[in-house]
Amino acid sequence: MKLTSTITFLFLAASTMTSCLNDDEPKDKVRTTDVTVLSETHITFPFMDSHRQMPVEMLVIVDDNGQQDLVHPTEIKGFDWERGYSYRLSVDKTTLANPPMDAGNVTYRLRKIHSKQKDNSFNPSDIKVSTETDVAYAPEAPAEIYVPDWSGFSIDDSGEISGVIHNTLTQELFHETIFFIYSLPKSSSLYCRWNYLAEKIYVSSPFSTQLRQITYHPSLQISEIIPESEQKRIVKEFPHGETICYDLYFYNAENLAIQKYSISLTRI
Image 1 (cartoon, helix red, strand yellow):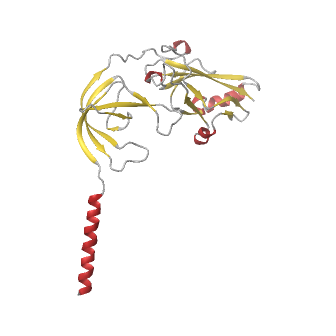
Image 2 (cartoon, rainbow, N blue to C red; image 1 turned 60 degrees about the horizontal axis):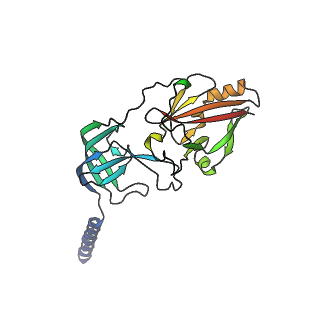
Image 3 (tube, one colour; image 1 turned 90 degrees about the vertical axis):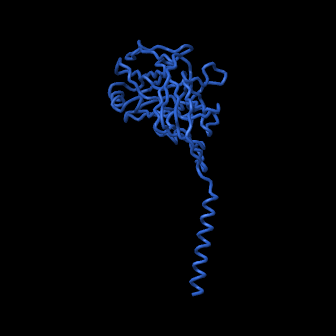
């Protein structure tokens, strides 16, 4: 009987201690609040990007106390952001007790859109880009904004494309890609301006007068720029020693070109 009582006592004591410990654990704090999403965005760089080579466009959120927060356009759950508008939102703002190492300590979830107001300063070009004669540049462009991490391209009889690698780390991380590095210096008048960041690329191929559109991201697969079907045609139709050129037109969110970059391949 004594043994049973002792075990029961120890069990109850352990349960009480566990409950106390759980009560002491930090918890997420959630509150519903209204915020304003500004039409103007802010350019920043990831924490680990000490060389400032990968700019990221962020939304600017302002609460009723005037406190600002920077949030990626995809990080307000349930919210589809459209460029050129300011918003008034009702959101659940969660302050995380134990945030992940690679993210902030605040998350947002959309409850309601109170208003959506157009910013008349955002007037994207309505030019339809089909051929190189349609290419229209933004003011102060073309400029050297992005540089690839390898060059001196060549293509052999098997269709394999190779080149001189300038950054072995990016090539280890992104095999068979061209990594376009943001190269503008801080002294440039175009530095960290949202309308001098690329959103898409138009590719000019030697096999067509029509430009082909691809979505811009820093690490582009070679096959996105030069499809496998064209790699086979280069091997078949071009003699050794001949140079083949692909022109890339980097376009911003205003549907204007900001840079032209040429990739020249030597047939070997």
